[in-house]
Image 1 (tube, rainbow, N blue to C red):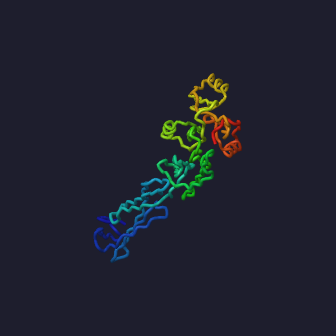
Image 2: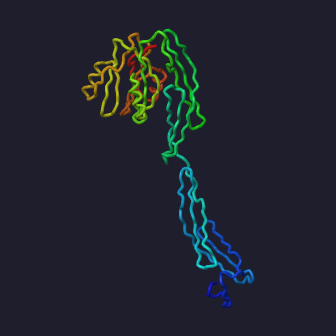
Image 3: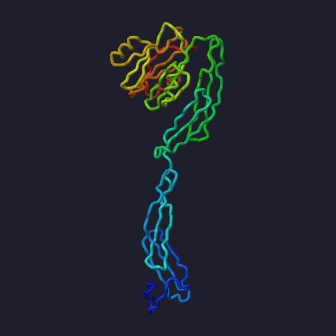
Length: 313
């Protein structure tokens, strides 16, 4: 049937603005691919106009981690009795985050820990939580022993694991004034651990993204047993050794000798264990005073290489 100058049955011509028309009814199919419009005469039901059209589809919002896909369906009709119809529909759910592994950053004073994870789909989606740690002194400060403290961080977000630092030196031995605090840092990109007594060097590396892991051990200010430091520009790795023959061999292979790094305790009070990772291209050696850390690394494939040097109690 036609309107506005065309004919309905029996040749009747009715203008769309005549009040005898009821309000149009629009019905969408289940997939919103078609829309059917129906309009009847309010005075004579025999006059009814029906038109079904295929819709145009436009995605106006793509699905993301947090937002669903939104699609606009548009139905445009031939007959002027019917108005263009639009419907916005959620056509796909939000995809959800694909979180990477959390990273943890300790404050220098170990009083807070910040956990962070980043969505692999959209790096602008970041979850972070900073919590205060609880502390427990596990060894009291004496004239010969430093104060040792355990720190624990527990997060509200279940995605973040409990973090613990054990046996952190929080006060030196009362009679020990000739010691050097050895800072331990970690590069999450290369896997290398780095050790330095130089606070400015530590702070500079932290500014570049290295993670400060606290005090690795205390070294004597001076002894008869120096520890040598070397650097390879090819892998960007550092190596530490008391063995002059090992030092000289590495220099022949292209390593750069950087001088004395610190000193080993002649009294051999606290052993620093050395481990080697045969699979690593950088950060292949690790040094720790923790027997537990040494044993754990050996259990997952590192090779124990004995005692590298000694620190103070």
